[in-house]
Length: 187
Length: 168
Image (cartoon, rainbow over all chains, first blue to last red; front, top):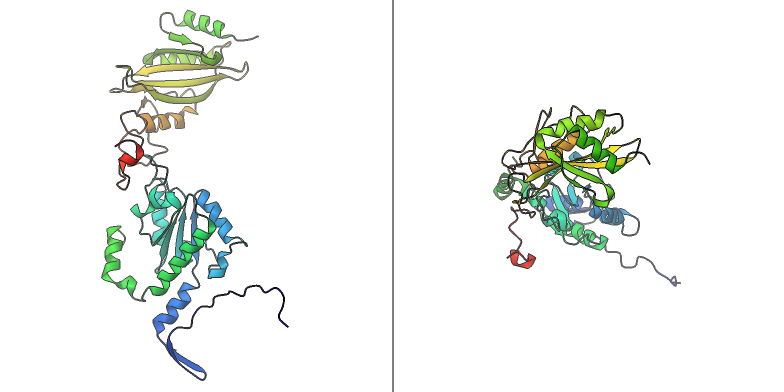
């Protein structure tokens, strides 16, 4: 007999990558397997400087639970992490610090700018505030809001996951990517 | 009642005749100004004198008055007598083209960072300061942001339409 109340009946499973399957084996594209693994095991590095950080804490908490998206482990060491989440106002004096953190991350690395301040300086149109972190490091996804709700953060993470999955294994070696890094003065 | 504003004023006028100006008492706080050359002498006297004993420098900052020709910058000292719980405010005016004033670091250790901050934002040159460099702003900054000729808004920003912000 079916239970009267059913929970979690809308769970979405990750699709199996395209390939040739038989009894006990599967042959598929290596790139697809790697991007599938990368996509669902992103380690975020929170760089929280203000109120957006509080919203991120709610996102990490049990109610919204970022862990559902394979980001259980929030790392605080740049070398181990894949996704730099910049949340909050970045003062000009903090700019070099942020850049240093980005440089310490290993490739492949992604950056999410959360909130108006990180994306554009927000209301702080002032001599002391960096007008958007994309002045010092390249950004993959911008999450609008002041501060954004946890749903918006999750949406941004899912956008990052889409990017991670769609990204080819050799994209980081491409000339286009080198040009992007050079435009920020990063080798 | 111990130290009154009237008593402080009379004592200072006796010690520094014809020097102190602009006596005022906004919200009961005694305020006066002096020529910039006298700032250390007056601070030292206020510190040393056994009845005045203003031995705590609460705050030190500058104000920019673009309309006061040849005395555009005011350096303001807030002093506190901790035993009598009396506060006074002491100002010196200096021209923006030659913003030199003697450093109070020898008298008050706390003046060190406050003078650096005042230099950082107003460009006041504290003569005799041991380490007069920027403290809050980035080292590369090449102007003094709190002076009135510099707009508050960040000038490097290109994505803002000025008309939408009432300054088209």
